[in-house]
Length: 366
Ligand SMILES: [Zn+2]
Picture 1 (cartoon, rainbow, N blue to C red):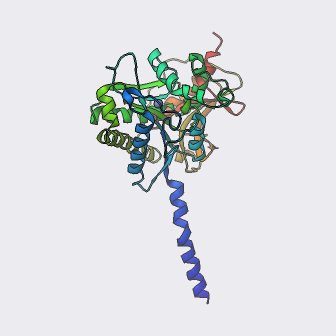
Picture 2: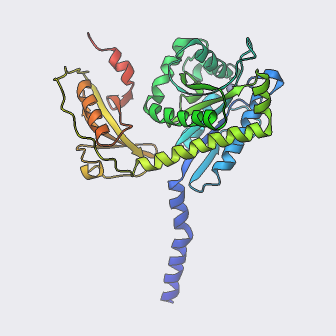
Picture 3: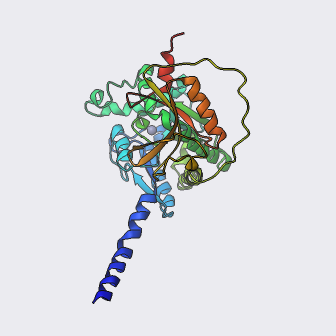
């Protein structure tokens, strides 16, 4: 009798335990096919952006799902209209590791314009980038009460964009890393014209608290590129390129938490730099983040002392070098980088709330 109970217990353990562990370790990718339903996206040369991007998103997902460590979440799997803010909340709820929004560009004034580009959320560097973001953002005009939903965001105002930037500041480095990997695949493997990694104020990337990119696969208004993107072969190729980039990103991401990098020899600091104190502000260096909860002892952090751990959603973030002196925090960042945290970046808090470093530096009294 006892034996039977023990066996039953063991079988029971084996029955459910591994499933739970796997689910926790899965790398979650949100694939966001732009537009859908009543919003066709751009219709250059009679092609439908909403259809092309959906096919490519599904293809990327099929490829990714072959890897058991990856879980794919779609914002839409069919021809439905999803509001922009809803796309972000899907990613947020899923506690995703990556958000990839897929689009096609158009340029009515000149059908010769072609090429692929990848965007991260940031200040538009030029008018053309603003125009692209404006076009993709203007879909909110189809939504009810968009003024309330997007805190008064006006897709036609360049200034409106600034307010949405800081939410993604924390993930900028990682977003840029993924964007570069995608662009390299488009250009290196597929010989697409390089429209580069760029920054612009895409509303869909606003509420994604994870590395996020928006891909503009090419121009439907260009005859040759439109036909390529509308073809099965073209879609498979573009999907494979995005898939390859995500896989490489994941590999680097996985390695980041375990790889030990030998610290470079310290260089002496030439001259004492002036303090730049911001009252009431805590600057910190974010050195790592991940689902794993790691003890903050210095031996876990390459000798860095006083590491702080804060849980945000499903992730633990690890900060180092808390100070209200910006000069000091830059020194701490330098040291963290020397220790091997090459992606270490500065964040700022006021009253425990995260604020934009960029904005706070602008308030400095000269
Ligand atoms: Zn679009």
